[in-house]
Image (spheres, rainbow over the protein chains, first blue to last red):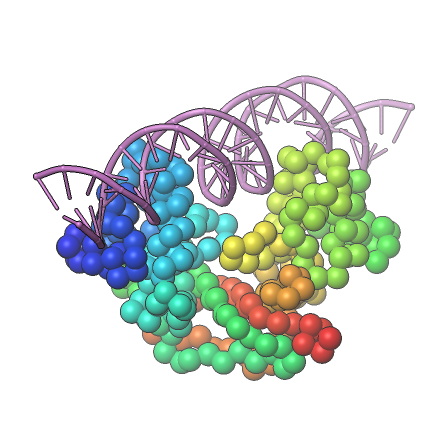
Length: 139
Length: 139
DNA sequence: ATCTTATTGCAACATTGTTGCATTTAGGGT
DNA sequence: ACCCTAAATGCAACAATGTTGCAATAAGAT
């Protein structure tokens, strides 16, 4: 993706195409899997912490990126799929953390999962998986 | 549960029955749902932060309690079920956060969910759900 | 009652989140 | 090409939690 395209992406969401934002988008784009916060910070170094904080915040609010908590480790950020819009994040994917190579990726589970909790109104489901990824098994 | 029982529980896991640990176990026990970190801290106040940190750490390692990350909010702690042992945490339950009453509970989903990611070795699945809990719907 | 080892409590530091405010700048209008 | 204004940045400051080292204390075994 070019800076041109990123600029469009931002403008579509009424966000100005500023240096920190383009830098962040480029970093996330280069990094194939979900990117740990610390990696983002050092990649964009010496970016101001607050600027980075607010950059992530606004891009999340506008549905450009999303956050992935993974127990016991860093917090990860990744591009949203096409399904994410300003109004709603549509995440059917799960976050998979590989114990071997330590990367976090967004995966689409084959069998769609139906969680059933009688009496409850389920509005949002977030799934984190740990294990060994395809690449590490093959290798 | 009595302090007597908590003491046994700790001894079974080669942990000494100290004041901070018993206080923590009592607090978690009184609190019906999963307890936010901040609530634990103020309940046990004025406990030393490091002591609390290490108390949570050791009780987690020994499978007495477990942690529940919930996006965008506090970190919650709760007792493990009977299935949790020193060797392995067996969590078939999901963490449910109610948007109305803001409590986090551990629920057992009716239909057991099978997530299928061909080519991957899935070792641990962690599920967080947001919505409205039974009590709030009824009320 | 004593001893050994686990545990605590304190100091110190690191990381991330968060707000306020003055300054700068992107991008629309002229 | 030049303004203008709202948006965005950069800095200072503070809060919450995580984390390590170490000396002092106390639990539980003997």
